[in-house]
Length: 186
Image (cartoon, rainbow, N blue to C red; front, top):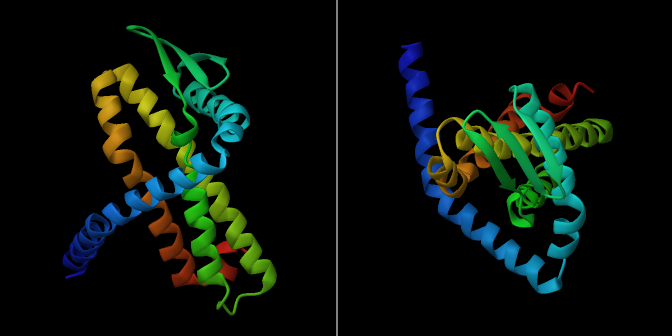
């Protein structure tokens, strides 16, 4: 019985995700157009993308891949030859940080958690969101190295959003089920 309930929860979560994903992706595109129209993309490309590239190279080192950097480009010394991974301003996951911030405001403004609990929950979630985005980019690199560039592009274009969206759902599910103070450890 318990196992069947687990499958039911997974099926419901997968169904919900497939229903919501088109809206999530469309909202990301809407945010992108806003950032492009106000010129903020340049700041992200110049200052944030190289930092994300550095973190990604560090994460890839944990998987035994040697990398060198040039701005937002990570050059991997892969077994099959060198691979260049360009981390564009629009692929670093800034949209998920905006969405996380909006959800944080909406969820925590009505929460009975202490101010410290709310702040800690927000900071833990923000750190997790950044880490998941770096992991998502590292996964693209790992797929490119070990499976091929075509599958890496497919993962990037079609499945990368699932990783980030899954994180956001999981974090807020756990956070709201356990209460902000207990998740945050405050």
